[in-house]
Image (cartoon, rainbow, N blue to C red; front, side):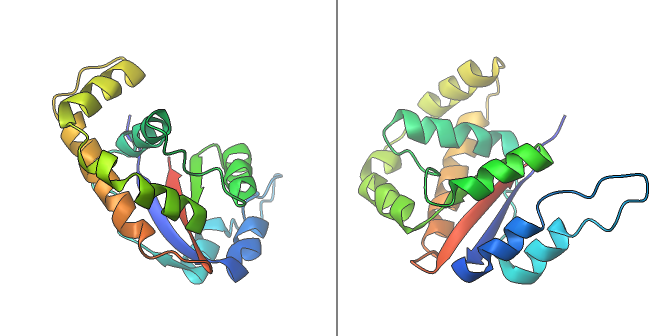
Length: 160
């Protein structure tokens, strides 16, 4: 089974537009599902995470474990709506999360790949020799993307 992590930078004035497109159409004669198209039109699509989305899925709770709880922002509602309506994982990161991540940057820089590998194995119940390295790369990618956000932009991460 595979999972993909996608990243989008969205200006705050477009959040409601994205939010209104989340609910998939229902019924026998479905109307067109506009969620993906809306995301593409109103956001800056960033490079997808090149490895499995499971790595990003492990990074968020790991950061929480070390005191860097991201994704609990004013935009948590949009993430919850995506989870509820789409059945995929969604995380929103805003400027408050950016400040928190910056305050933890020294700790995060020192995280050992072996420690990440152990965490991944415990979280998913599988041994994966390269998971620590992939998670470290994923943390770097998230940090690089977070540099692009400000008080007018959020980062939306979709895993599914």
